[in-house]
Every structure is written in structure tokens, then in C-alpha cells.
Length: 195
Image 1 (cartoon, rainbow, N blue to C red):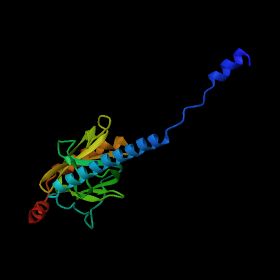
Image 2 (cartoon, one colour; image 1 turned 180 degrees about the vertical axis):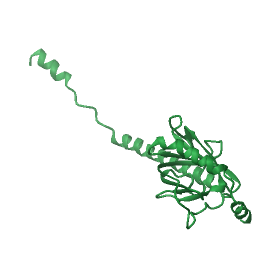
Image 3 (cartoon, rainbow, N blue to C red; image 1 turned 120 degrees about the vertical axis):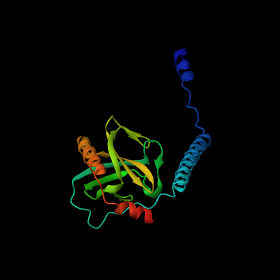
């Protein structure tokens, strides 16, 4: 054997043998860790829902909500305690992000969420609207989020929506602000007090 062939044969080594038992052990350990973290997050979500158990059931849409003033199709990003964009409300499904269809009438705001709990915000419960950039851990561009402030069960809540056409947000802020400052009958207040 010539010296060059000898060096070539010596340079060729077999690939190291993979230790499959150790690799499988690491993968299983990682999966168990991820499952544990997910379980902790779920428990925290349930605990938050328990703490917010005093929030009454969400109002249902009346049989005749009236003629639509505005409609919007987009996403619901969650609800928080008013003014506290990280204090997420999870009771009654308010923490579930989903697609949304909004309809504004003289009687209030209808929030239809396929696959999640729909609800209705009576006009007397509306407290205003604004453009913002974040809610419940979701951050968008400046003015990319329509935030509606409303009252339910003695709490003021902020609910965040994003239209599929962001140019609609300004018209919604104007209409919601006008409706929230319009004097309403005391029927809603008396109903809330009777509960």
C-alpha cells in the first residue's frame, strides 16, 4: 500500500454512533416540561376566572335590537379592567380571542363571536370609545385597536376590537362616543339594581 493510500484510509473514520436512549430521554423531558408549563398557565387562567366569578352573566341581544348604524367585521382581542390594559377579564368567555361581527344600533352594541360567547352592550352601559395600540397583552400599531369602554356588574371594562379595514375605526369611535353621551332611560339602571 502506498503512503498516500495509507493516509487516506487512516483519515476515513466511521461516523460516531448516536446515543438514541439519551436523545429520546431529552425529547421526553422537554415534552414533559412544556406540558407542565401549559398546565400551570391553564390553572392560572381558571383561577383568574374564579376570582372574577362575581361578574354577572353577559347581556343577551334583545329580540329587536333596532336598525344597524354601523357594522364591522374583524377580531376580538379581549377585555380588561378599564384603564388597565394587562388586567385581563376571563369570566364568561371575555378572555377568549376570536373573530367578531359588531353591529351598533340605537339600543347598543351587539358582539357576535363565532366559536365563543356572544354578548350585547346596552347603550346605557356604554362609557366611550378610543383608538389605542394595545389590550390584554396584544400590541398593535398606534391607533390600530378600537377600544370600547362599558360598564357591567358595577365594573368598567375595556374591550378591544380590530376591524379587517382599520380605516373604519374613527367612524366607530365617533358613533360610540355620541351614543354613550346620549341620555338614556333609567330602565337599564333599574334592571341592574334589581339583580
